[in-house]
Amino acid sequence: MAYEELITYKELIIYLAENEKDFIFENDSLEKASAVTEAILRYSKSEIRIFDKHLNGDITEDFPTILEAFKRLGNKTLKVIIEGKFEKDKKIYGILGDLSAKYPDKVIVKRGTVAFENLVREIFKDNSLAYFTLGDSKSYRLEIVNNIESCEVAKEAECNFNDKDSSVVGKLIKVFDEGFGSEKYCKPFAFK
Image (cartoon, rainbow, N blue to C red):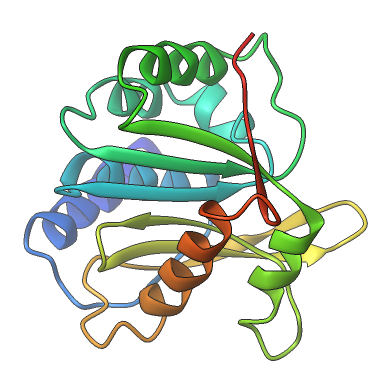
């Protein structure tokens, strides 16, 4: 992606996030995924929820601004459900470990079970698995997994910084909170 194009995209994302625009848009590259995720972390006012395969992949390792956004959460609550293996040698592991030790009631990471994956799949007509980042009760970035065997994620994600009718965000929050609050769906994660 050309540098000028990325700068223009980031400016658009900041505009949409700052002004809480109800506008659904697609996100089709790692650079754009990084920009949207960073904006959700930065512009959410109170709570961020993340469900991801392992959260230690391309965006958290290759884009330092994401790591900085995690470090600057302030008084926001961050709840994370990891589906797969969380590699200890990745930068995000150390950051989340430090934050959860410092703010144990504000930064909580859990490991999702197969039952949680199935709960997420029930939202979608075709029984797809999806990974998502939610900001407060209005913003989202939603990726559909294309290949269940390899957990290959779609190159495109759907995003919105103000899902006014909560048609997407409301369903995802309901499933996330149900899973996060139950040991049937999520197990505690220890950073050691």
